[in-house]
Image 1 (tube, rainbow, N blue to C red):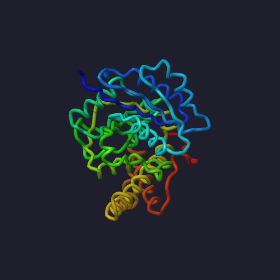
Image 2 (image 1 turned 90 degrees about the vertical axis):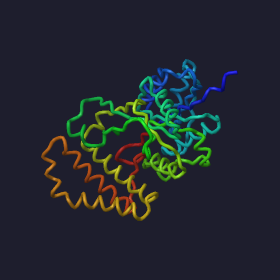
Image 3 (image 1 turned 180 degrees about the vertical axis):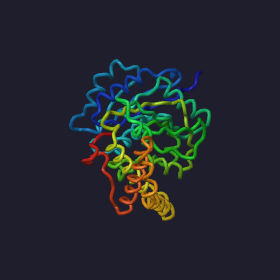
Image 4 (image 1 turned 120 degrees about the horizontal axis):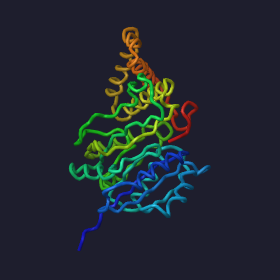
Length: 314
């Protein structure tokens, strides 16, 4: 008698991106090489007012190749949306959760490559690269600012992963850890995935990197500019310092703060890089990141999902 097929829940947190979500679902529909797996797709719509994701899923569900459903998550923030995905996976007793964001598009072999890598390395959590699809060709300064870098890792075991935008999780490791949640303290700022993955490392999860499990993130013109890059850099520094405060203790916090002070203290010297077009925004981003770290030490967060600077999109 043939064995039970392994089951995968593809989980998508979404907020007011019906166009992006449609493209993502089209790319999920086109996934290849999954005949031996049982697939379900679940969208967590974090907008009870407009519920555009819910309406789109209702439109597409009947013609989708796998079961496709959506749940409206009333609690605001990315942590609540991700926790709804965890709840769905636990209640459905699936073997794996594959997370991907609603501003991304998956390559046809995306999920197959994540699953293959998990099997090869017996990993609990597998990450894949998120490359960038610019709506308009960015300037050389923006392209090399550091914000749009993709980890150059080869396939294999890695000590830690940092983001949930392209992620496969074996649910057994979650069950063994008591089904940990994404922390709502990071729900409106971001960083919830970095915090979650560090806690999973503490729970002895085994991480791996699937270099060929590629997703593409859409970068609109409004993000391929100096102002957005500097905001993003500030946010990155702010979140990284908050993560150090939670997980790195006094030593980790002191080291991270020391690096920030060195960057800011060396500004008169490093400013010479402003004359190099390809490094101009990179160095300005380093300064902005360092200021973000100082802000975190002073108790100031950055409201990425709801603040006035960057809007309420996830």
